[in-house]
Image (cartoon, rainbow, N blue to C red):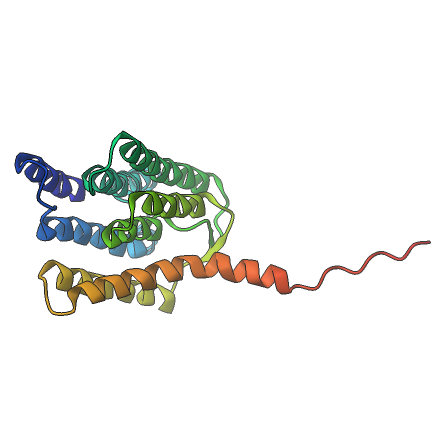
Length: 235
């Protein structure tokens, strides 16, 4: 649904001659649908365990994740990269490459997740719903295309990396849900052109990106602070 919503906005843009920006309401509606998908993804595993999941359900869940958190964000990147500014073929190619990286990263991450033994406390790599929200945040913040493409590529790398992200269980799950609700509020303020809506969008987006980067940055800092192992005594 999010893809269709954004596709409709892009079609309207093309029909207008390509000179008017995408209509905020259409973009906000598409992003809101992705936020809803991310909210459901927080609790679908718990519901499946309580009701008794099946192998088919697990495969359908992966398929839904690829569409919601891989294909849809990639389409956002393509639409943004091809509609932003007066970019030429190189800019469009860079945007397409970044979009392909996102889609491929989600597919690889989900395939790896299906093959690994479950870990009760951490995910290996950035979870795809948060990766998708980070990618869309980059698009909404609308940096220069080359800067945005680099940021999107970084998010794609984090999704397939070996960085251990904590699983949103218990209070952390509700905290993540709260972040999604706050993000939806910031998005609504921006879409309705409310006073301070742009500031809220940038503040919420910056906070989300900071949270995504906090885990790998903290790991790098911890490794630097670890004392070097003492050399073995020679005999």
